[in-house]
Amino acid sequence: MKKKASFLLAATLLLSSSTAFAQHTLNDGVLQAYWQSEWNKDATKITPQLKMRYIVHNDGSAPTMVVNVPVDKQDKKNRTFITKHFSYVPTEFFQNKEGYLNQPGTLTVPSLTKAFECTSAYTTTQLSSFVPDMSSGLADTTTDEKFINCGERHPYLTFYRLPPNQKDIFLKAAPDDRAANTIPVGNDTLLAKLQTVNKEWAYVAFYDARTLDQIGEQKGYVRLNTLLPLKKAPPVAAPVRHRPKPCWYPRATHDKVMRDRHCRFSS
Image (spheres, rainbow, N blue to C red):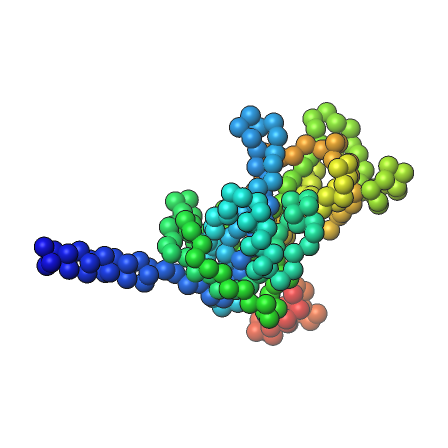
């Protein structure tokens, strides 16, 4: 019996030891907390849901891994965690339940499970610890999020368009019906909500698939009751490949080397 008990104790210690070594510590990354709009089962109402993900930057450039981190079911615990571990949390983040926060730091998780639909994203069932780096200068960056091949690049954005058969409207220079009209919005225009002003107005931007953040330069204010939210985010465009500009060498010359050198540096 003593030998059997000793064997069971040794096996238990071995299992607990292997579990400890199975933990993953990820450095050079940014923990992102964000709100994502989700539809109910009947697709009649959207509700913002708090989510988190850890974006790994091994060389400080493009992300190499994305880890989806589960949040607690209790809003109070999530608020406490974010307030404690993020260097800057604006009031609007929890008040309007929109946008995102980035905090560089070191993440430790007990295990990583590879997501089925992705090649560079992982999910975890538990968060062991997160040690924020309050001195890092990356806290205010958007990390560029260039991982187009996996998941939504900007899940915190909610996109809108005009209802069918709706007449064209104008974005406003201010959240006021008496404010000046700025930019026309047609039925084929997609708008991304940047900020909620109040229950009636929002600050929006034209959707632009060619940019990394999907945000165009045309921005303004609009009444929310004139728009319909999209049930699915628009696709991300592939990088734009520019055709080389035609080059005319100023001299009619048979020297191809000189002509090619001139075109390469003037295009």
